[in-house]
Length: 111
Image (tube, rainbow, N blue to C red; front, side):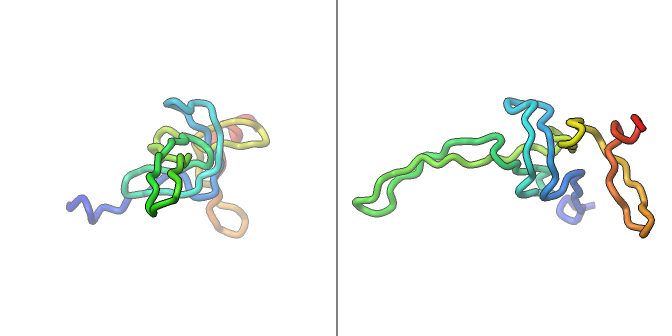
């Protein structure tokens, strides 16, 4: 099977609240802004901030230092529940209307 034809899938979506479990930003929580399924990376708001020095493009213009989020590998983040402050894997559960909901495993086991 060709590497390009294989469809990638992530365990998190845009808008999910996640907790970083490894790396320099370990323990921080934030919301996912963008996902890159083909590279298995995500961008989390205000986490893994990197500085970029931008040169002036026109004469008379000043240079800038821009802070922007860098991508984190999706295996380094875990779904997080703000209410109970627990990060966990999830399980799909069908609700009464027949749609699949994502339920965190650690919260579900405590009931």
